[in-house]
Image (cartoon, rainbow, N blue to C red; front, side, top):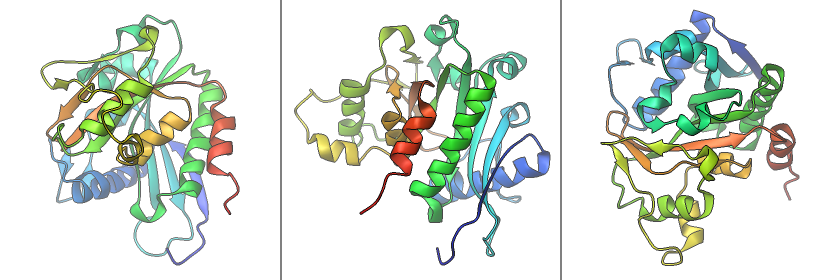
Length: 255
């Protein structure tokens, strides 16, 4: 990046803004990561699905960007009312959410999160988390959850990072969602202590590590998504102190 970003964050259901978010999703999920599926439109350069129209989209724009679209980060937010209209949360295809549904807490599902490659780092992610924290507070959300992905579907190659998530970050029983068959695979692939923990954590994608730093935990089992060429885990996070944690992590002094 050769310029100083001028970030602008919006929450929207505007079709034109959603189309711009879908274009970034195509760049990341299809061009970069090799994803496919019914919602991939190569001609238009968009990745979409029927949930998009029911969701609120958190969109980060760099107003100083002069090359390409100004949309550089997106999140898709699905609340309980909109999930009821859809008949389910998006991630219920992959995970049994019964513990969350039975909790009586106000839920918000996060999905389709991505950042433009030039903006992966503290500043852009902080803006995204700050906007999310403000929305969570205003909407009275108690629990955030959603699937996040490892690139690729070779779970043996992912054995160490999946195992450390299972051993060190497994959700407590009261919020432990479970992966659904037949694409469910165990995350407990290597005995605890049998692998290099530091190397295992380095292999965990940055977005998942971001959730963990903010107090997130993972559900039981991973889910292999061959359409998107990913191995997914489900993260669950209590929203208490979200804003303070985000500020401490993403705006800490850098020496």
